[in-house]
Structures are given as C-alpha cells and as structure tokens.
Length: 467
Image 1 (cartoon, rainbow, N blue to C red):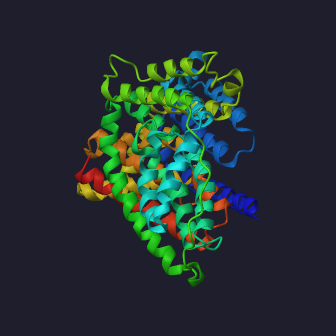
Image 2: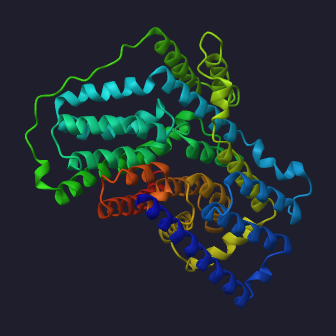
Image 3: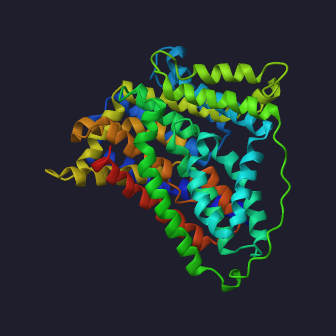
C-alpha cells in the first residue's frame, strides 16, 4: 500500500511539473519574453527543464540520465569540449560526500551505532519523560558523530520500538509516533547544523565557496546555522508532542511497568582508537585554517588509516557499495549549474522572476517573496541535493538585483531547501518515517507541512535579523 502511495506522490509531482512547465512555456512564448534570451540561453533553459523532468520522473536509470545530460551539453553546443562538460566532477563536494560515506560506514562497522543506542537506552531508565526531552537534544548533536541521516534513522528505529515496548505502550502510541517524528523529520533538519553532517550541507557549503560568497570554516558554518535551526527544531518538537498527545488514543496512557534490562555490548579498544581518529579529524576542521589545511585532507588521511591491513574497515567491497548513481547525478548537476551561471541564463531567469517583486517594496517583502519562490521551486525536486545545485545559481542572482548581502540570501536558500518535507518523497528519512505506518496520513502531513512552512519563517527571520 505504501509503495503505491509513493508512486502516487511521484506522479503528483511529475504531472504538476509538466503542467506548470507547459503553462510557463506558453506564457513565455505568448508574451514574447523568450526574445530576451539569447539562443544559447534558450537551449540551456530547455536542457534545465529536461534535466528536472529526468530527475523527478525517472523514466530511465539515474546514472543513464546523468550521462545523457552531459551528452546534451555537448550536442546543444553549450560547452566546447568534453573537459568543460564534466567540470562538475571536479567539485570537491563530490569527493567529500564519497569519503564521509565511507567513514560513516566504518564507524557503524566498529560499533558506533551500538554505543549511541546504548547511551540512549541508559538515559531511558529515567522514564518516558527523559526520552521525550532528551531525544530532540540527542538528535540535534548526533550529526557531528554520525554524518548520515539515513544511518541515524536506521540505528534509532529499533531502539525506539524497544523503548515503546519496555514502557508498556501500544504499537502506535503517542510516544512511538513522537519518536518517529524526531528520528524521521527532525533528524533530517539536524543534518544541516554542520556542513559535514550529510550530503546536502556538504554541497551547500561547496556552492558558497564556488560562488565566492564566503570561505566558511567548520565553526563558522555551525555558528551561522545551528542557533536558528535548533530554536526552530525545539519549538517544533514541543508543538509536535502536544499535537500528537491531543490527537492520540487514551489507551496509550498506561502505567509504566518495571524497566527491563537491555543487553549491552562491551566496548573494545579498537572502537576507541577508530573513534579517537575520527574525533581528531573533527578537531582538525575546527582549529585549522582551510587555506593552510584543505578541507578534504583530514578525511583522506582517515580513510587511508581505516584501510590499513591490520584495521581493514574500508575495503574494495566498501568502495564498490557506494551510491555511484548519485555521484553521477550530482556531477552532472554541477556541470549544468556551472553552464547556467557562465552563459548568463541564471541571471536572466532571476531578472524575470524579480519582476514579481512590487516596485519600491521594502526588504521584508523582498525576502518573503524570494523565500516563497524558493519554496515553490523546491517542491518539484525529489531530493534536496539536486534542488540546491539548480536553484542556488538562479536565486543567488537576486542578490545584486534587490541589494541583499549574498551570505544572507545563500543561507535563506539552504535552510528552506534543506527543511522542505511537504511530501514523504522530499527527503529519504521522511519517506522512511512515513513507510513505517506508525504516523497516520493526517498526522504525517500535518506535521510535515507545518514544519516546512515554519522553517521557511525561521529562514526569513534569520535572514532579516541574524545572518
């Protein structure tokens, strides 16, 4: 049943995109706006629309569609050489994602997930109240130690199910629903607190460097985005718990039985050595200057260390298991994004969209309208990574047109795109949470839509008063 619903969601996005694209193309043609684009820009725009269709509808495998986009760059004359077509694969962000994925798998192999789960079980001995309060705090810092939202979800799901059983609650209790919300939706938002927390923040931080907006260090990023993100997340956790409690079943409120003892595994010396090396990598990011110590150097050395024969955490099999289809998609997306910026298509699109802003509008109105544009554009992308690569160059062109500092506009885009989860397919962890069937459709959509809109408001306020 859930698979059929996922197909329905994809069809909704697919046909909505096709309808809006057809209407937009008709409007451009009828109004003669297409004459404002050069022939090269028109070809770029058509390729952009075709690429979005391939990413959303997925009529062919992702890897093949990515190769097709690279071929179209050459066939349409948008680049002169093959080297220019594959320039997106020179982005350090791709290799950063690759290496963090390997490191994350290594940490799971050595038992990091079991140690974290054991810690959560220990604090659960204080009763459900400790978990209800502690879970959002726990998930808000967990990306520092386990840089994969999906890995965090899969690690914590069985733990929350066990806690729900231990406390004597029903299968779909308010407690269990709240835990699913935290590890599914809040977990996705928490990924952004550091730029090493997952694929999306890595790509976003690289775009900020590529467009010469700022050269942010690990701590710079953290101080900019963590405070508004945490404020929004904790408010939503409070509201989410009270909403679920209000609509929950009275049978959930049962006496709590005596706590069962859970088996825990002993931590061996290998774990501490591997974890120590990982913490050293994080400390290197925090205390060193990126101009002197490149961001990629610490994870490169850590991967070599994890691959040593006596350790063997990373093998050829580990590398082959990496999601290479996603690697091709991101590389092709970067190449297309560079072309959008290089031939002026992004600037031209921004010039058209800026006409939606009323003349003599104040900065607040301008920021609100831009936020709404980003929110609508994000809806048509299944994953945030491809969304940010395409949307970022278009919307960043607004900076000069409306007089908004680039760093503020950049984080407005990042926070809105990263926190969007209107449909379950908009993020992987949101989909996994929905697929459990623990939250009802009404509960899931109420929370996901409200969360997406709430974080858009947080992004607007942060742009105006914090960043």
